[in-house]
Length: 205
Image (cartoon, rainbow, N blue to C red; front, top):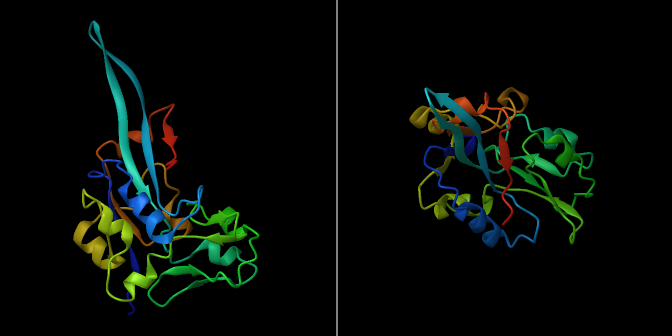
C-alpha cells in the first residue's frame, strides 16, 4: 500500500509562538494576507462559585493547522479547472498554470486551507513542502517548531505512534474529508466544546 503523508500536531505542547507559520511564510515567500499555516488560540470560559469564592473556569490552548491533505479533498472535487491533484503519496497540490482563480476550492474546504493570492490572481495552499519531501527533508513548519509539537510522515505510522484524533474543537468532523491529520489534544479540548462564549482568534502574522 502506498504511503499517505500527513501531519501530527501535539496541541498539548504548542506554545502558540507561531514559528511554524512564519517558517512557512518565509520558505514559500507568501504575500501579505496569505497564510498556509495558521495558529489558532482557543480561549473562553466563565467564573464558577465555590462556597463564598468565585474561581475562574477557563479553557485555553493553541492549535496549528495547515492543509490536511485529505483522502477525500473537497477542494479537488470543487475545482472546475482540474487544477488540484492528489499525488500518489497523498499530497494535494495546485497546478498554478491551470488555476482560474475562481475560489471554488476556498469555499469548498472546511479547513480554510486554499488561500487566494490577489496579486497573482490564483489560489495557493500548503503543499507539505513537496519539494523538500521529495529530497528527504521535513517541511519547513516541522523543522521550525521549538516545542517539537509538529511532525510529518506516513499518517498511519503517526497514528500508531502517537494516537490522537482529528476531531477536536473547533475543527469540522473528520468524516467530511478524512484528513491526513492526527492531533494529541490539549487537556482543555474536551471542555472547549461545552463552554459558551468560546473565542477562536485567527493567526494574523
